[in-house]
Image 1 (tube, rainbow, N blue to C red):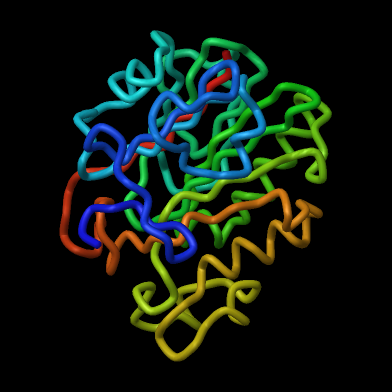
Image 2 (image 1 turned 90 degrees about the vertical axis):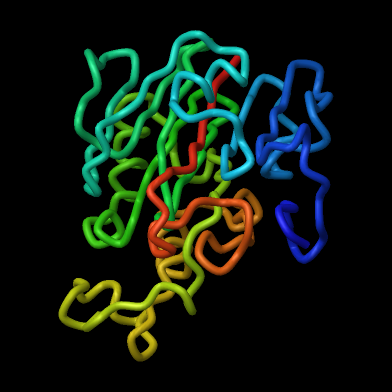
Length: 245
């Protein structure tokens, strides 16, 4: 169904013509849904996925759409550098942000890479992460959790994780993956294709993030609808924005 958001095979009507979903205080959705069902239990959390049908074209605009004037963003470098948002100045190099500050939106951009929204409800700490194959090669997910523990004492088993649309295995093709990727990603290679989603799931398993506290959006950015894809030679980017009220 063109331009509909699909989860687990069931189409969800697009809210206001945008691929944007927001939770608001009191538990009631601002629109028809939020992008990750597991986050619905947290009325203090707001999450937005902004894709092709969104009118937002910057981190600031996307944060404002969620109702926030302050946004922390990155010069994304396809690595494993994580920042505590309230300690940053300007726009630092990196691919992950974490914070316990309310009213501060965290934003990452992606197109085909994986993007993660992380929430530790007991300690009221949120995080976002951009991880393409280069980020997976340097274990960016592990770096995020090391930073969560070091800065806020958050353990993997305390977190809930929503994962944005990204390349499916069939669309994640490489020229020579055994030479392009490090050894820890080799088990996920099938011919010239790499299951980067399975690699991320394995890393989360290894860290101890419970599977029932994780949800992956099923859309593929390349062969699906509704999101920008670098591999389709599209220059625009999608946005994942997370904040606490």
